[in-house]
Image (cartoon, rainbow, N blue to C red; front, side, top):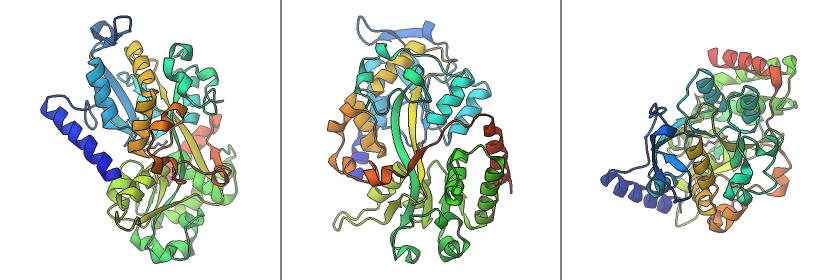
Length: 387
Ligand code: N2P
């Protein structure tokens, strides 16, 4: 299924490239510096907003379907400049360092709260967004952004363990414990076949905190130091810290046997290594019994955007059911858009690794803003990455 989807997207991209179009930007195109709202050229409809010539979109790696970008460009005559990041902290660092070119960003729950606090996000009025009604009320009005005064839900997901089904270390069952990242006796069994962890500070520190029986949102310095030490003793057994292209560069080619993984990236490896004849994949995905992270990523507009109206228009476009479904059908991340469900392919809707069933959902926890303890997390992360 994935291969067919990929091919269709690739073909339409090729056709567009041949016509001089294409999904805007390509990798690391960087923020646009062109003047914005003044530089308006097109309108979506006679009574629609004046749209800018360009829109600079900054998103997680592999987190949108190119066909949706192409559709927006073609339908509204807006050139999308697309750039990607590996973690919430990378996004924050970029914006805090004064990057002003970005118009649309996708921070997770706890990072929305940090960014609001720092005054980095523009306000929105969701009553003006016709497609906001498509969002599942369970994901609207979240505590990190009451009343959706700044952002709207984009996609959500879980963070667990992707593993190679044919590795002898997992012959007796799925690695459904964070011990598979931290227990030296276990690590000795498969570390030579490769282990990847997400290059993401809150996500990785959370795995150690879960393993130690602490909250993934602890603000206790002693607990965080314990988590740091646990990570440092396991680190020599880990091959890579990769939260960007690890599914395509490490999992699918079998460069690792196990990876700390977001569920959509794991699903990408699962679907892409599936034998069409037998339906058997090379990869599996497990949620550890000690608990795991669930996240809600959001569409937001930096306060520095000079193309606010166009950003808002794009935000509304992404919440159209067909567009939200196309994104889920390509990225394999669950959508918080209820109206999109009828357009999401059956295999994805029924995949318990993508849309978790009740018993799994009960083990999941949100990451929340830890206030000033964020400096302790930063300090631990520097120690982790530095040694
Ligand atoms: C996909 C990125 C997932 C975002 N590569 C996790 N918050």
